[in-house]
Image (cartoon, rainbow, N blue to C red; front, side, top):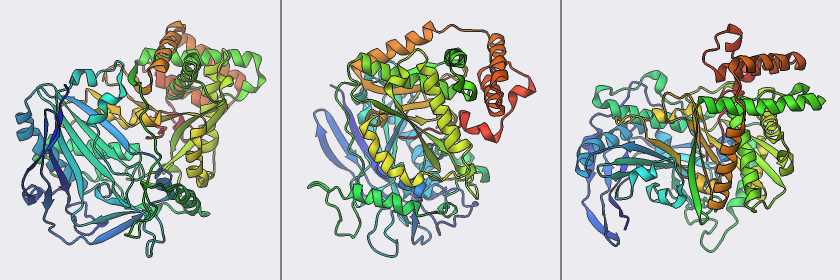
Length: 585
């Protein structure tokens, strides 16, 4: 019988002086560890063969912090109905539980406290007051005594099975996910759970509400925490370049975007039930998220694509482009796909075909969702270190029959690339359409949706707590959202990427067959031959943008290409590179 027993639970506190005006020189509280006060231990029987030992800690606050409110921007509000984002980081750790408790655990806790001093909104609470002076808008609140739930558990499950890429039941990783309340008047933003597999490894599970920040910002937090834990007291300070930018006032509302989003959210939140009343006695509207439950018989798998496989996929899609060009005059303006667009398009079509093959295709329409980074496109632009949401959903809507022809991959790639180009790259009004973001999100359940979460540029495998690179990084929450989770390859040297999917077993078997079969059937060409064909294609299109995109696309594929013209990166095409940030679910 598997044993997963929680033996330690605490709230990691932070100390701050006068938020949000934290001085960059205040880089850590080396003596904060001495401020912990343990109020004793108590034992709770949680099931056969498992015992829970809990302790709660508080910290004395050196300086009065006061209470600070930070209203959500319209970029944040969009994500309020979604369930929390849940990430799992697996690390090899061939030591006993006692060794972990006395060596690694103190570093994890102490460095987390030091990190939260700078990422303080992650230690705050989310609420939607119904009274002044908050103007009836959702807010993040920070005050002295803020803390983050930190749970340590022991498991005798098979660490190597859970951290492998092969098929496994999606429910198997659920015990590794920390609990983060969502259906309350006031909810915390972050929860952490560390599960120890004695003499095998550890798993650091984190859950956060998407409304606090997007995936790029949260990966910044995780890598900062890991860096401080790895370096310990040898590096007690953060460099100015690594500090987060938490000021949300730089994002200006326009044309009532926030109000329109809030009106849609208000109707969603007030779909009350006997279990969740609408307004609490504290004059706060009860927050809730979309009720998406884990379906039975769901399995999880990781698909690895090395550099050669990525090249093969792009060649497959490009070959279909050439065929369309020969028979359809409309392809004169087609945009050759990047590596990321090719993989998303190929996965989307394989998924739709797998559903049909499994006899579970129930709708006519399908949608693909990817997020585009808007920080550099605002006026004024937001810094790269911004700790918040600043992405615009790009939604592609199509009929499933559009992808069932022989050129289905090229059709999907063109739709995705064209939507990003029209909605973001060549869009002079980047905020246009955001007022419908919440209503669009709540309506997508009517059709098959594939959302791309994560990004190869987040560098999640660089999250090193002193144990080396993670053995595996997973997004547990895709077992409910149905997204594909993209990240860089866990293999440092292959230059590829990987993605996770959770499907029911019948669909997964069909998907694996289609995905691998299509790759094996694709005919690989040499880089020289591909470049020659691309140049011929571009001479026909005569499109400067298409030329730039294809030139970058070839540079993205082969490192040995050294021609200066093939290394260009222009602002017009930056969202077609791998820094296009997909939706983080």
